[in-house]
Image (cartoon, rainbow, N blue to C red; front, top):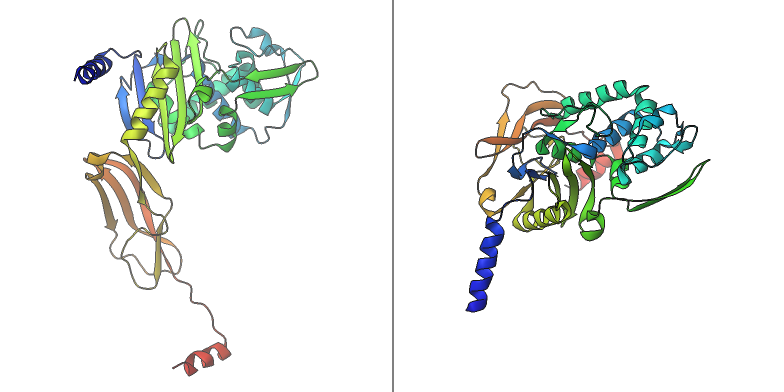
Length: 354
């Protein structure tokens, strides 16, 4: 009995203790739905988690990451966390991306920015354009590295989780952010870089992420993890115990939620005219707990008087909602089934079967 009482007291102390972080989000990476949040929309300084956007912009705008880059004088302006490359040193874009993400190289960020957009200013515009496109409405970038003495990058934990979800869709980004060790040799030096994201070593389900720190921003961290085919992203700001915090949040929400396939693109279960194949553009998965599963609704709206056509056409929409919130809405398509042409001999054989 004493053990039970002691356990209950410890549990109460745990759940009632103040959170270590100022802001946090746990996001379902498949649906983009927030499973947990604290102060999710306030703007904070984000330090080197900025480099998630830097890497994504480079990957979206450089055709060949194996391309060689000659380091210029822009690297002399770098300070703080660095990979210590020098003017006239030759590396590939890929090398620089590893230096950016594993070692948080501010010098790497400046070289990549200039190579990708011709100038740091041009690159920052690409960063902000990408943020706008992704719906990061509480985000402003001023530099590609995250240092905040001269100018500032600000975002919310929600926006940074959105960014990480998008970045993890990129195969090269997933490969880089999950790498624990990277070796290379340049015309000047030989390097061995180890990933500063300790979660990759401490937590077996971790798949990537980026840490950050400045005196003003304090500890920032955006990470991703996968367990039992469930994909989560966690973002925390001002959390000195960030690695342990992320691991605890992952375990809590992996255990509480199950993954459900709510839309099957090849079998949307929609009744339509005979002789037509009906489909949607993509599958849709969503993490739900027991109470939420009962509240999810699948709503189908079919348009009236859609003219018959042999080509694929939109015949309506399908929505996944819960408690009045739409989590997914996409078009439903129908295309006339192709009739297989039969030879005269096949027709005779078919007739004889009767």
